[in-house]
Amino acid sequence: MFRYSNTDWDGIGEWSFIEMLPDEVLIAIFKYLPLDCLLVCENVSQRWKRLARDTAVWRCIYLTYSAKHDKVKESQKTLQVIGTHSECIHNLKLQYMHTYSSIRMLLEKCDNIFSLDLCMCRIEKEFERDVEKWSNLKKLSLKNCVFYPSDGDLIIQYDKFKGLNTLELPEFGLSRANCNTLLDLKNLCHIEIEKINNLGTEYIMQLILSKQNILVTFHIYGGDDVNDECLILLSKCPLLQGLSIIHCENLKDEGILALGNLKVIEQLQISNNERFSEASLLKTFGSPSMVKLNRLSLAKIKNVTPAVVDCISEYYKNLKCLALYQCPRIVNSDYEKQLRAKFRKIGVVLY
Image 1 (cartoon, rainbow, N blue to C red):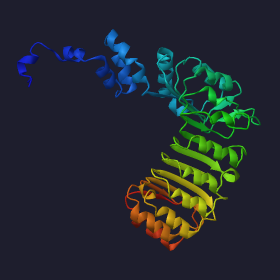
Image 2 (image 1 turned 180 degrees about the horizontal axis):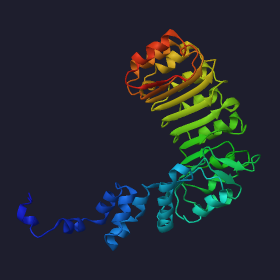
Image 3 (image 1 turned 135 degrees about the vertical axis):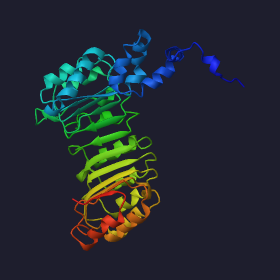
């Protein structure tokens, strides 16, 4: 066996040793550095500059620009990076930008974006064409954005982005004009849609079926377009880890019972329902797969009772957050006072 001795390192300084490292090792190290440190590393040598700008390194860097007044310093730094490293930027988030011309000016500088996140921004019709610039887009998020004109829809042809795996849309992002472009996306496994503009239950079922073997997260507004059959289809998704249905008024026991068949579920949010019976809730949340949840939100669910919460408190050992927003049989009751004792290690949100 080869052994190092102290004499093996005679005459070899720390810098020489670092320079002996192969490119792939230095790149692996650079991935763990904060952006400020990475920019400093670029000034060490031509080799380090080349490696510090490697795609594998910048895929790990998420650059955020915010137009909020309390983010001026951070945003100035971001602008500088966009100006000097535009070709390196792969993950970009823009926040609170209310003039689309300003958004467009920043986006035009970046040719290699894989992940684009616009949050609390104003989007105009031109974005439909502008976004096509990034054919290799993996993630597109437009959550909480507003669209001008306010009475229109953003008609993005999503099937132009064959590698898209994450899509987060506001209510103007999906309509009859472009909804079918989601069905053929082979990698789309994270879907979050605030509203679906009355596309109908049949479409939602088609969407779930088209992604049934790959779906990891599915968040949807619900309402009239989601019924028990949709939940039954979701219960057969073998990889589904996160599920959120905000409006469940039309769902009955058959739907909630189906969720007990999910195998790897970790996060669940179900809101607004008066039809689920206490017995069905007890059976669902007593399922062996459900006890693996780390986040659970049950808002305005009429028949969430002390017995249901007792089941959760006893068996859900991985739970980090429990929300019981306005559950009428829990809040403002004697049982509410006992909740803090039952969940000593996690936060319980009631309002």
